[in-house]
Image 1 (cartoon, rainbow, N blue to C red):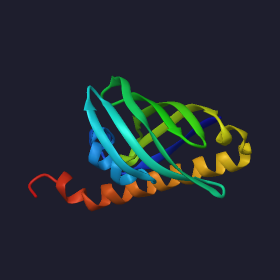
Image 2: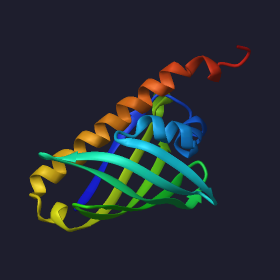
Image 3: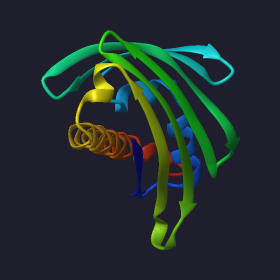
Image 4: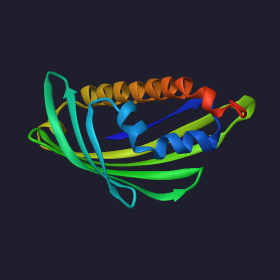
Length: 155
């Protein structure tokens, strides 16, 4: 399954990069994450609970941020394991400044699934992926807004 899209944020490119590299922010904005544990060298152990259609399952796994080109590009590699199947994910993340103080975050990724989740309909899985992506962007926008005063010099 492929996932891609983009979202605009009203924050500096550097601040968006910093938020996306912050383990506490990532845990806060990612739906279903119950724990994100840093292992060093941009590697993390993950614990999450995800609902796919009528089935809810606990996933454990690992995530790594690689190929970083600060503050423009990075890649996320994840392996998530559960009793209903496994997911191996690679996502390219591009951060680009646009006019009017807008910074665009574009993503393009591929997910390889196995087990019961691989047999779930593409439409159901696409819906779940899109819902998770929308929740992440909404939570990140909220986090940016909550922290906006810390970006203003002299305050």
